[in-house]
Image (tube, rainbow, N blue to C red; front, side, top):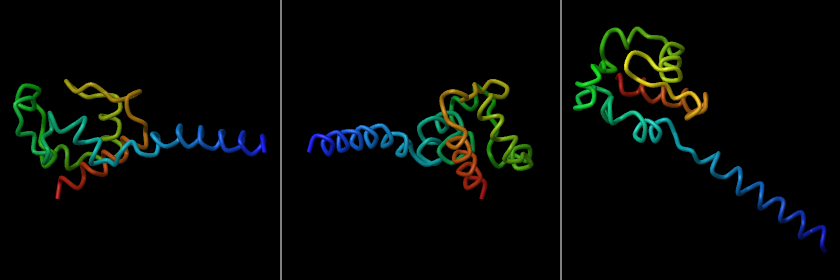
Length: 106
């Protein structure tokens, strides 16, 4: 009986640790929380912060030509006035954000 209680406790502990990691949000949720203030909810960079930071619209030819790898690198390491998200977002989360950014270009 004691070993069953111990096993149950270990399972509950593992679930409580893994739960938040699995629910960190989709690319859209992360984008809305971290990126939209500058890039705009629609990616058109029509926000006051975008004007100050001289942020390009995701529909700008330069951004349209960028590869996913380039967008990933810019998001992770920063570019121009944008600070990078290395250490704040996982690589998988950044990939999800880049995928979501691509949906805003359509």
